[in-house]
Amino acid sequence: MEHEERYYTMMMSALDEELPAAERDELMAHLHDCPECGREWRALLAIDLLFRQTPLLMPAVDFATRTLALLPNRRLRVRALGAVYGLLLLCGLVPLALGIFLAGRYAPVLSEPALLGHVWSALVDVGRLAATVVGALFAGAGRFVIEQPAVVGWLIVLAGVVFLWGGVFQRLLAQPAAVESRN
Amino acid sequence: MNDEQVWLERARRGDKNAFGQLIEAYQGPVYNLAYRMLGNSGEAEEAAQEAFIRAYTRLDSYDPAHKFSTWLLSITSNYCIDQIRKRRAVLLSIDEPLPPHPALHSDNHKGPEAQFLAQEREALVQGMLKELPDEYRQAVVLRYWYDMSYEEIAEVQKTTVSAVKSRLFRARRQLADSGMARGMVPEEAEVEVMV
Image (tube, rainbow over all chains, first blue to last red; front, side, top):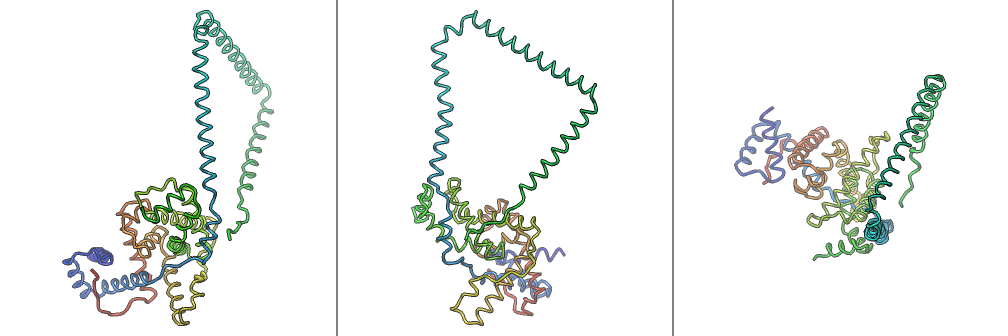
């Protein structure tokens, strides 16, 4: 019911001690007149009291000591991370410095038109060779599929079986092992 | 700089003993949150340990502009929600009655009657919490045991304040229904509105 929702919202604000005085009086009057809402309010108050009176529970006395013993070595981690970052930095800096040094030293030789022409033609030759090899492979594979469809079919079935068993194997590996207790 | 900030700074540089001070200071809140979320003392202790280990390894990502306790409790509650989902995924039954918290057995300062009542209340609270959806339970625990504001709960749950209000609204309603079903409602008592 609409009136229920409205008074329920007021009851929640009252529980949070945020209900303005005017609304509080209105709610009080309503709770006296409406037995249903009065019952709900008493239930809410009882729950509120019960929860507020239930104490905070403490762990076993040696909890802090045992937890402290489980903490990982943060200093070691910080040092390891520092080493990794240092290495990464070196990995970037060394080639950069080397590149700048080599460019400075060999720039006159590298910028000669004849040398650049040779490098370009070598790259074109390598590209042509790669295209010939890939083309031959595709042509051979196409011919094989046309001439030996049964073999191709068997290969597909075999691949399916391997894929299926791979999935089963992964699932077996993912089975949970016995949980080791910390304590 | 207060003690907590000093410990945090030292822990950030790899001082385990400084982090040990933080564990000492927050073991209760972290463990309690894990227990309220998981409802089992063994799992709660493991979750609390894991939360501290995660906090220690991720200290660099902690933003000092926010409260350390909120950050730590956020790690704990998110870990607990993951655990609950995993537990569901392996189809473990969570409907079996859980053993009461060991602290309730070993509290010799209370008489047997008080101890019994505490156990009863604990079982009732955990039973009611268990019926709530994970996000509602998380919001209720953070609100009642940690007195967190809606903004802080929203930060922990990585959601909006209005979503938190809506979750708490529904959770309280569900809890009230559950309380009524359990006969918890005092009959015809004088109604009074808190301000």
